[in-house]
Image 1 (cartoon, rainbow, N blue to C red):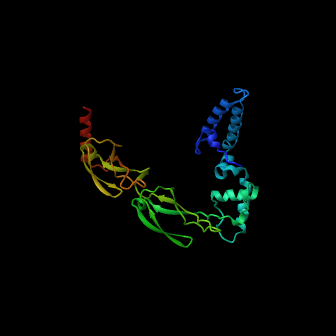
Image 2 (image 1 turned 180 degrees about the vertical axis):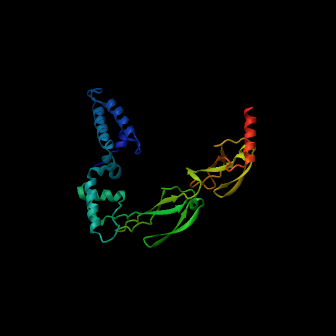
Image 3 (image 1 turned 60 degrees about the vertical axis):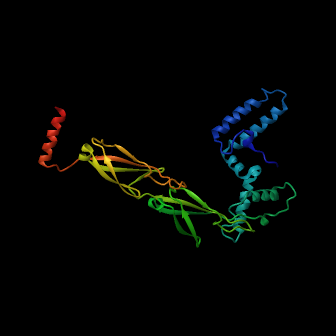
Length: 296
């Protein structure tokens, strides 16, 4: 059976949303509807094709099978059942879980016919199992690019960890998965980063946020304050009459931007004014005098 590109029929890309599929279908169904195109065989043909495309793509499970198996999507259940049985019969662990596009075609040809193919299922080259692993790191560990050795299934892998990698991000290391079968290629290794933030900085994308205590006197009179950044301390000038909650941006003092060497986000400092406690009698008198001056 020839491959029919249902996305092309509806004028859509493969990443189209459900809403986009619905809109495209309604528009084309109206355009080619037989009532609007009497005795038009071409319009009738296109109307049927549009309906067929919509029936597949508007159904979540059918669309998933179509995206994976193409023209053979209707036989997906048979294929997956046979795949599972073959896996169970195999003495090689993790050998049959991933097939290439050509493997699917060969399988369907041998199972359901369609041409002169005489290849048997057992002769198909199977791609090796993809391995999945988690790498747990602290936020400070991904501030700079560095190398780390991982042990996966007894094998040491030297991995370069790029600065700025995100929590939950997955990277693929090609060819470090399970062995292929019948001369098939190795699978890949997918590493998911689990990054814990034990610092006092809050990370927002590649920007950092930090709350800094500011004593009342510096807030009123101005002065200097030393604040922490992720890679050291800096001195900041405090303007007189600085209000509680005032934000200061330190450009380029944030977190590194993934795969953009030398590029950093910003650091946002929020001043939190601390009210003095345990005042002496004289201090209370002075605040009282100040209060009277402000209200006179």
